[in-house]
Length: 266
Ligand SMILES: NC(=O)c1ccc[n+]([C@@H]2O[C@H](COP(=O)([O-])OP(=O)(O)OC[C@H]3O[C@@H](n4cnc5c(N)ncnc54)[C@H](OP(=O)(O)O)[C@@H]3O)[C@@H](O)[C@H]2O)c1
Image (cartoon, rainbow, N blue to C red; front, side, top):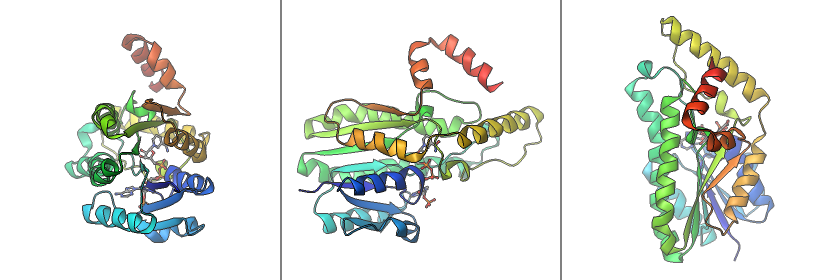
């Protein structure tokens, strides 16, 4: 039977590249986005269905899953990709910004996963692929809330892998480094705080982020890693993608690693 992948946030960047790659590999693709019009250029064949799904709206989640199952009969891989970055001084992040960050990056991912699990459990197979980040195992200044969502995804996934093993369900975590996508244009950023230390640090961070994103890897490199994770029947959990700094994080003790990060971000 042809395998099916269900992807959130397929309108751009990593999600879109992933939809294109799985379609090219002959999979059925349920490509979802908040506005299905943004998916039109993915309509490559009858194997691709474009569905409306906002990860913060459970009605759209249930509807999109039912439509995908009606169309293809099965879903084998879920790619929880939708997300964006809230950056800036924690002190100046508003409760509504914090809520939206967690609703999208974390609670949305929980809800899509929870809604698909009964299907995976019944078919006694399935792979859940969660988009974390290199920022799910290390952190940069002024990213505390974005990192909090990605570190939470790491802990959630690590525990869930044991819980779902008896049902034949695998959990995988993708950890991209800097990738050239719409991510940097869509950042939720504070306006100036009027506090010179914060404003200076923010300016520095943005300069670094913009220059990193210009030289960054293209999203199809991450799509390839996601594909590799999807067909990997091993128990491996984490898949870094263009994130060499994670190897350094693994070997250095905290004291040395933090000193290095302070040096980089000064
Ligand atoms: N780019 C990087 O450097 C990088 C590095 C590490 C991890 N990541 C992670 O990779 C994932 C994909 O990001 P990207 O780089 O491909 O950025 P992107 O080009 O901005 O794509 C993000 C996608 O998420 C979707 N999205 C946002 N809010 C949503 C919601 N409420 N419901 C459904 N979809 C929603 C966007 O859809 P709309 O068109 O509707 O806004 C868009 O399709 C994110 O989880 C991000 O944290 C990115």
